[in-house]
Amino acid sequence: MRIATSIEPEHPLRAAIRPDFESGERRLRLVDLFAGCGGITLGIAQAARANEFALEIALAVDFESEATDAYSRNFASAQRVAHASVEEFFDGDLGAEATLAERRTANELGENGGIDILVGGPPCQGHSNLNNHTRRVDGKNALYLRMVRAAEILAPEVVLIENVPAVLRDRHDGEGVVARAERHLQKLGYQVDHRVVSAETLGVAQTRRRHILLATKAGHVDPATIFENLESNQIRHDLQWAIGDLVDIASAEPRDRAPQAKADNLARMQWLLANDEYDLPNEHRPKCHQGTHSYKSMYGRLRWDQPAQTITSGFGSIGQGRFMHPDLPRALTAHEAARIQGFPDYFDFSSCSTRAALATMIGNAVPPQLGTAVVSALFEAGAFGSMEGVLPSSALA
Figure 1 (cartoon, helix red, strand yellow):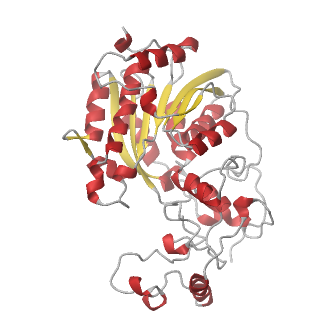
Figure 2 (figure 1 turned 180 degrees about the horizontal axis):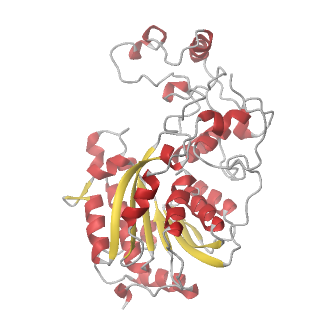
Figure 3 (figure 1 turned 180 degrees about the vertical axis):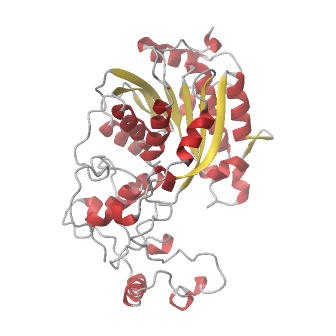
């Protein structure tokens, strides 16, 4: 058994007190669309604070009320957190004149200056590999282009869009949705690059892979240099680093409540521990999983010295993936899953009304380190150093 022997005050995930992200010598003004609970925002806030910038959240939008509740709890100073669809703010076609709603949005956001960075993670249900291939033509794919329309209206210095890697295979109106986004952003005067990156290379104790599209105003930092910076990162974290201190935690908080396994799954976990195995043999699996299959990780046990697999909303059941604790006959707690997703202890998930809602919010969240890594690299490359705000897009003329 590998257990942390001491508490490290500087450990980024164990911090219990939220930093003052709202103070700094200068400000970084943000709009977060499809914001979820605020994973990307948190990462950007961390990068901004490290560079003595205050984060100013001009607008955050999400369709799920529990997500916006969580966002508001964690970023109480946000100027507006809207439980709404993004189309209520950006409903025009690419290249068209601004609609009434878009003019209103731009005027409201422009009262205090321009937007420095526009970020968002459009819903990926339409292009998740967990769905059948026909769903890659889901109408949600078009939501990806709402980010591009928002960029057209707001003219931010930086645009960051994250999604699942399978988005590269999505098409909208006969054209790849990412290719269409790239082409239109370039028409708007942006430099654009996009890559698939592993969260593991960003300092997350998880092998989750995400597609990132990054656009910067022409003449500013080249996005390609940012990706080169990310790819050169040698920091890797294992499960011991992320959750080793939680093994013996005594807490009555819902996030630390151990999942209750059914008798057959409990027996499977006890077998793995007794035999010091990490993959469950076919004869111990349910009959429907005993033939030829590619579900090796399902019912599997995690290793202390490796990152976890992608955390999903099913982390509380070993029948949903490799979610068994390395040393204990149980699946992961919400606290452990949040840590593996990269959320520090000060992040407040208490707005979730049920355990299922909590699991969904954590599983759907974007690891904050994605925002931290990209924006930190932008700072290092000289971005945001001379920003004084920008005028709205010419689409408003």
